[in-house]
Length: 622
Image (cartoon, rainbow, N blue to C red; front, side, top):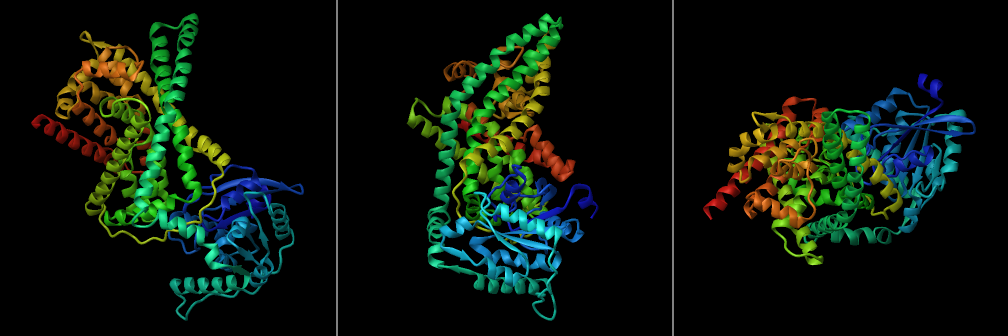
């Protein structure tokens, strides 16, 4: 109880995934903990504080769990914390729309901890589905305080604070527990079945509902979104729509942001000049570090600011678990875990985030497969290069139909990336990571109306700012290195030109050239700078070079020998090459293994080189 004496009473917050547990945490503490609507979102503890009647309370948000018999690392965290006795009160959050399923965990907590308070959340959702919960009957059967709430609207929170205070100051005598032993053997499976049976019996007494009306809307939507006939087509259509909105909406703000940031370049140069900085320091800071960072921000920020909120809206509405359901069969046949579909979707925004999201996979073998193959899906940083190549060499004209055609081709590239992800997963599961795919239970949460304001705030702060900050952190030293390579001469030629000449034979074999391969290597810190590095090499410039329009870029590339075949090879290598520096660092942190990090780098690179060589050979034959 040392923690209680140091920081006030401690309240442990427990619950199944998707019950609004993190929303209760945010509402009580005022913090903005992420409240995603799919299983396993909270994978580590979060802490917050609130003051009530002059007393400070510490609230510990534990990872979501279905049972105190852990099947994953995050569930083990929850069990161990409750058994440690560090909490003065345990608050269990349950979903009023599916109370029977949630009560099994409540019963396990009651056998483990005391005092316990139960918060029946989402009463507003239950009312919409014609579900009524008798809180008094539920409290009588459980033997602990029960409070009804709708945390998103703030309903019931005042009463909850009062009940928690009462449980801390004047805890009720612990009732004699009704142990769920199941059968004489007392095995975990029998105990789990006994908890479920008793939970169902309690819910039958406390819950009144019209079964058909309660689930009508969700069933109708699931027939469209998860059926064999329409599930995959609808998923592809939604993806295409998000990509089209991202492509069509990012151009103007990207140009405005670029103009703004680059307008500060010369004033910064003038400031350094007035301070007496030598030419090399001025060039390194302005043309190297600042120019690279400005390019990364202007190219990366607008698409992320559009893609992440749209993606989060689908997550908040409860659609992402349906994506995992639709793709589970494919991943099972590949020897991988169905939840890899979720981490793969996260990789579309940022591969580093996708790698961290692999923590939701319980099996170490299948988690490793998901980590090693996440970079097969193009992240947000590769989209600008993919979009430029598609617009320059494969789609002609302007307007709506041109944008739709470009979005369709980009979606085709992503479908190819998904197919290669499945192939690579199958390869790993049959070789270095052999084993049978594990079974898992995937909860399909109820559909909910997304909170648009919170989604925008969460997407911009939690995701966009986080990813952009990491990209800037690696882009700044990369800019310095690129500037040095372009301005330091060896034998009458820059280091950049020497390196490109060395790589040129390999580049020609892959259907590209030495400057293109070097640009990918220089783009290791951030994929957004690949095209500027190519232009810098072609123009023999001393710093990253942009382009005035797509027409000017097309003319420059064709003047340096580019054809449709070259563009196809560059597009393939953009899809399949080594992950960026941020992702590599994240892979190492998640695996703590240089061997697995090296394999995560080598595998997509080998696939990309093989595909480029095959396409180049085919084009030469034809």
